Image (cartoon, rainbow, N blue to C red; front, side):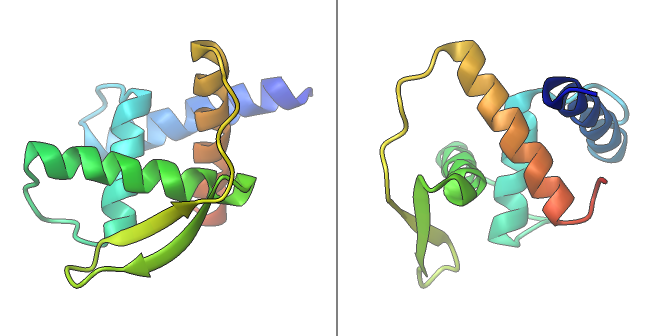
Length: 118
């Protein structure tokens, strides 16, 4: 099986598993899954977040997801427990489809690392 096929298979499995657990089976989209990672990384699971906090959660998730690729480095936790990252390397210009593939791959790797999926 090719790398792309394996990624598609794992991505579909991840979407189905997360959707069942967090949205009563309604399929979560890429942004929804990124948001879940942000909440997980912050560690405040049962909090109602304001709109600006939700944007910050997605930023945390993107930094964490792209950290293994060498784009970000964890820096510190602030006094409220929010993680902060510094940019190590600028992301190359990517087309929308390429961005989506990178994020799906990063999400699959993240959830494999967390042993949520195989």
